[in-house]
Length: 273
Image (cartoon, rainbow, N blue to C red; front, side, top):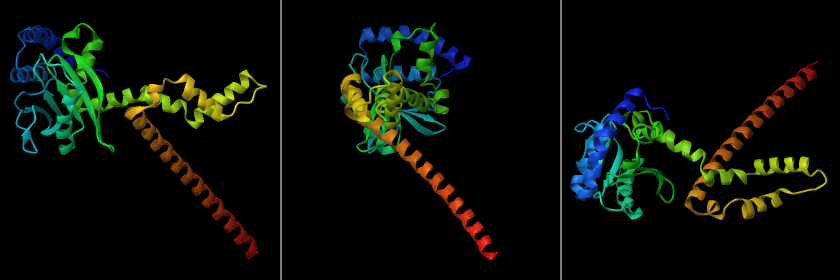
C-alpha cells in the first residue's frame, strides 16, 4: 500500500511526539479511561481523524456505549474496544466489540491498549466470526522505516476513506497459507502436476488421487488443512470455481444455441429450394 507524502509526514511527526508519551504512560500503568484518551490522541495526531467530528464515545449499541467509534463522512467505519494500557489483550476481549459490530453491520473492529493494536475483520458467514488481519506494536514502530509508516498508515483516515483496509485484507488473503493450501489441491493444479511428472518420469503412470493424497498427507502441513480459516478459504475458492463454471456453461450454451439457430436457418433455406 502506498502512503502519500503528506500522510507519511504526519505519521512521522506523530510517532516522534507520541511514542515517548505512550512509553511513559505504560510505566505509569494508567487506567482504561486514560488509555482511551491516549488512543484518541493517536487516532487524531497520527491517523488523521478529527477528534471532535470523527471520533466518538457516544455511539450507542443495544443500550451500551462502545469505547470508541470512528466515522468517515458521518458513517461509522471502525469500532474500538479499549483496555487499560497494562492489560494483556486476550482473544475473549474482542467478542464484545464484534457483537457490537454485527448489530450495526460494521466490518472492522480494533482491540487496543494503546501499545498493541489488533485489527479484526468481521466475517459475516455462518457462524459469524472475526479474523485477525494485522497486529501492530505501537512502541516498536520506527518512524524512519517506510514499512512501519505503511503498517500504521493502513489505519489512517485517508486509507480507510479509500477502502485500503479492505484491499489490505484481500492482499493478505491472496497469500494466505490456507488459500494456497486449497489451491494446491485443486483439480486443475493436480492435473498440471501430473502433466509435469510425465515429463520427468515418462515411463511411470500416476493418477490424480495419488498426487492429491501425497499433497494432503505429506507435503502440506496438517494445520493448514484444518480449522475455520481453512474452511473459509475452501468456501471462497469453491464460490469462485462455481461462478467460473456457471459462466463457462452459459458461454457454451450460448454457442450451442447460435449453432442450432444457424443450422435451422440453413436447413430452412435448403428446404425452400
